[in-house]
Length: 284
Image (cartoon, rainbow, N blue to C red; front, side):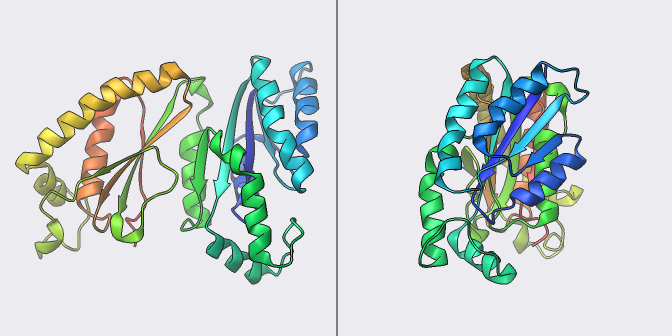
């Protein structure tokens, strides 16, 4: 059976970069396809001897008419029994304005100002974003980071209908990640930043890992979180959720959250899930 991925999102949020990455990951990508044609193309692919088993439609361009068709099209595909996932790419207004001004591209939504055009498109796409299987905010994500995130999510076709689980470490001083489901705060743990020998290291280094995990509160925190996830992950999977992202935050995203995220990844694997662990702010 063919696996379908529909990519939508705000203009300037990275759909072209996503299309190129997904093509490299082995998806057959059809870019800039009107939503009204997705069902027809999927029907043809499903009744042919096509060699492609993963088909990606990158859409969302073309204004209100194209946008209004997308939810209906995705619902129709799912009703047919096909395995369909919807990816939504988002970004902040400030970043989108900067990107459009940098490339001097025209926004596809007609409006008196660029900011108003972005606002209108955001309103039009609000329902699509709400029902997306996964949302990636690209405001602070470069092309290489986006590629890594997409590879974590969509490289493995063998997972079938299993729920994809991601654990993301981050620093609160760099802002909350906007594209996660659960946020946990580990700033109550002693901070290795204040130990001179540990400051230049990260939570991936053994001395920092031993220091963080060696704190009396750490084991209890991890045990309680794993117990909670042991209940939540199967429940989400039973409900049909395709993706679950869990964010672990500390002050800078260098030490505590990294070590805790790595350890949680190992513990969750023991529950029968295969989490992707990603460290958002490690290179800052």
